[in-house]
Structures are given as structure tokens and as C-alpha cells.
Length: 334
Image (cartoon, rainbow, N blue to C red; front, side, top):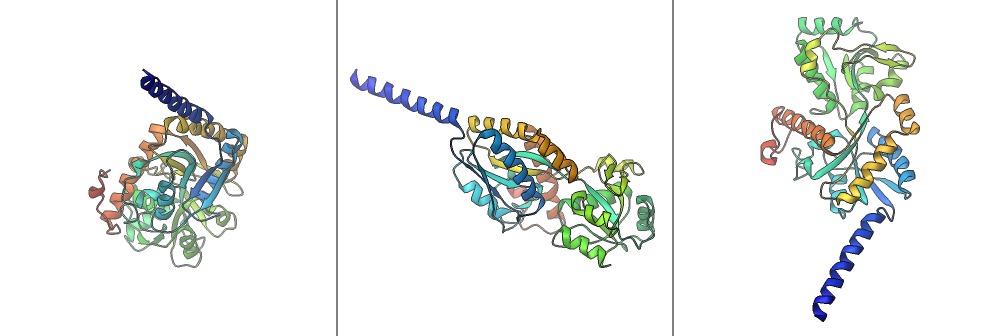
């Protein structure tokens, strides 16, 4: 009887301690390991949302940058290697879904539960010395001179490259794609006259547009966009409705926790995230920097990243830019 009583007490205490710990989450500071460098879009988004969530949770969220590898693999590995208890977040973006097929990550992205802050929409622009005033002008020229007009859109398989490919499929045009290591180098290439066309995000292009260094032709989303000092940038869907079959392919910037993080901790983080993204500070920042807020969590966020993983991984494989066959990782074709 004494032994049974001791076991019952031990079980009760273990349950009580577990319930208490869950009820107290978070009881200490949280760390957000951002896989990209300080000052970039992913870093900025994470610092904004982390600061607002910290106010709600009543603990600090310390943002640190851990770069390197491919597709953010070094930072992801470090974050995933920590205890799966909700106290370590991984600041990431849609580009991280390529880590597996690039050989830097041996798992699918579904080991994460993502929280999507949002992203800035892509647009297609040209250098101001070109004769192209509208997207239609450019597409008609690209059809006549198939493969001769040089276009930069960051690295092969990047979201900007996928947007360029989607534009080609939806319009019937063909460009001479020139890959660069990132958005900034591709935009610099346009200004240096190395390429005529560039596809990057509005957040990345905004200063160049205002300074007259680039001429915006069209947004690669269904809606037009108002840009300060520029005016309305029309949607490419207006003249080319076939784009709706392939676009939009949007950025998905935010953070994630391992999918096996306790539900109690995830619920607290989801609540804080939802409240933070609805604050005036986050809304004002997004508007001023041309970000479209998402706020997706749970099934909706997982579904968005699964679609991105499928699209990115198989595009890289078909371009010959992947080291690992997506099929071996169980990534379905889009």
C-alpha cells in the first residue's frame, strides 16, 4: 500500500510540475536565431515582430544572427539542435526550403511549424535608358528577340528567379537569365548596364525607383501598388491574365519552431504573434516598407511552406542547380 501511495504521489507531482511549467511559459528569455545576416529583410522582420511579442509575453526575445551554409542551413541546424521547448525560435524565409536539395539539410521543411510575418511583393523593372515604358512593350520585344534581352533575378531557384520564370510562362516571352548572388548585386548589374531587366522585391527596389535608377513596369501580383514619389505601379495581370496560372509566388518571411514543440508553448507563441502582428507599430512599419502582412500560423502556414518547398526544390533540380534529388527527400512535384 505504501509503495502504491508513493507511486501515486510521484505521478501527481510530475503531472503538477508539468502543468505548472506549461502554464508559466515563458518563464525566461527566448532566443530567435536568424539564419540570414543583420540588416536584411528577414532580420528586420524578425526584430520588429520579436520586439512586439516580447512586450506581450513579458520576457525578452534576443535576436542573434547565425549565417552560413546553403539555404540558411547553419542557422537552422543550430536552432533545431536546441531543446524543442519554445524557447528557441528560428528566423527564416521562403529561401530556406532549398536547404535540403542544396545538400545543407537532411530533412524536409515539415519538421518546422512556421509563423509568417509576410513579405514584399516582386515587380519587374528596367533601366531608364531602355525604350520600354510598359510591361507590354517589354514582352513584345522579348518575343521578337527571344532570349536576347538580359534579365537578372538573383540566384537560380530564388523566389525572384521563379517569378521571372512564371512571367515567361504566363506571357510567352523568353529572357536571357543572368544569375547573381543576391538581390543587391542583380540590381547593381542593371544600373551598371550588364542587364536590362531586373526582378526583385519592392522593398529592395524602392530607393532605386525613387532615385530614377530603375523604371518600374509591373507588379507580379494581382493588384497594383502605390509607391511614394512614383505613383501607381500596375499589376502585370492586367495585360497578361494568364499570369494567374503561375503567380503570385510571394515571400514568406518570419520564424519557426520545431513541429514537436509542446502544444502549450506553441499556443502561447501563436497568441502573442497574432497580437503583435495586429499592433500599430507593425502595421506602420509594413506600410512604410512595402510589406504585405500575412499572420499565418498552423495548418495555413505549413501549407504555404509546403507549396514553396515543392516549387523551389523541383525548379532547382530541373535547372541542374540542386545536389539532392527532391524525390529522395519525399518532396512532391508541384
